[in-house]
Image 1 (cartoon, helix red, strand yellow):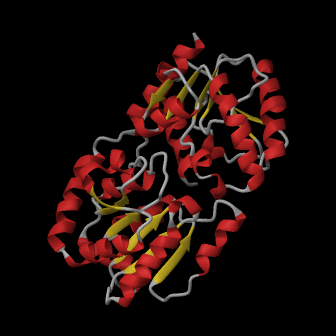
Image 2 (image 1 turned 90 degrees about the vertical axis):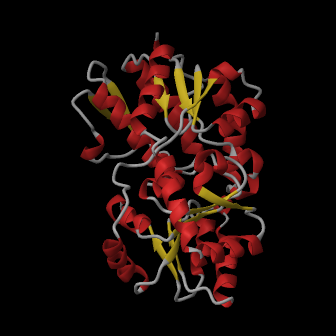
Length: 355
């Protein structure tokens, strides 16, 4: 799982476990794995067809979901990725993480973009309440969709409890398996245009030409088919890891010398919190939500300026004191983010809508 998947897992799992007095109907669009049924108060329901195409999105939400909500007499529909059922009369709470498709439409495949542009303004108006993941995204949703501010709430994301600092001996063992023992910069996220990997790769190659010795590790998978070209870069010091399970990912994050996360648009940026929980220094883009999340735990760059990214790679690699300072600040700022608090805030909103 990546951003939306982990968000759903962390938030909903806590809701279910903390509120056994409520019944939770989990709608799946395919056979589910048992570990997603978090407790006895969950009733799993498979709705067909599998919704992995814009035309099927419409059918799934407008027919299958609407019918299931009515059949099972649901009090409220919670959608953790913002899709809603326009045909249902059940009160709905949707999580709209960001509006990247409104600001950078060419980053999204044509048919998906058409679906988003047509339906998400309708979803925003349909919702009894909208949750988003940052104050930056909240203001964007309010302005872009002309929403009443009281209808939109910002609730921060967090990171798994498995993200913790790693001692120096363990770091070296992990680095040995990844980069033959070399220190490394790390990127984590989907290989999507807005993540700005092309400029990051260009900056890193320039860093190498100028004598830089750190490797670059990239963790993530293409979000759309046309995003896969980015992984064809051939360089013995650039390591494309693809998807990593949570246990391995926490190791790779904890052993990094620096997270380099420079998307030009982001709704939250969960890897920032994962890095902070591990005490990893951060280089972040200076736009969108990233300064809100990373605060003083990062040094910032203009994500459109390759030469500036290169300069900051050298700065982090060459200054031990700076890395130590940012590591300390990361650990302190990471304490601000708590899935338990986030889940309870979301559940309070859901209960209020269901009344």
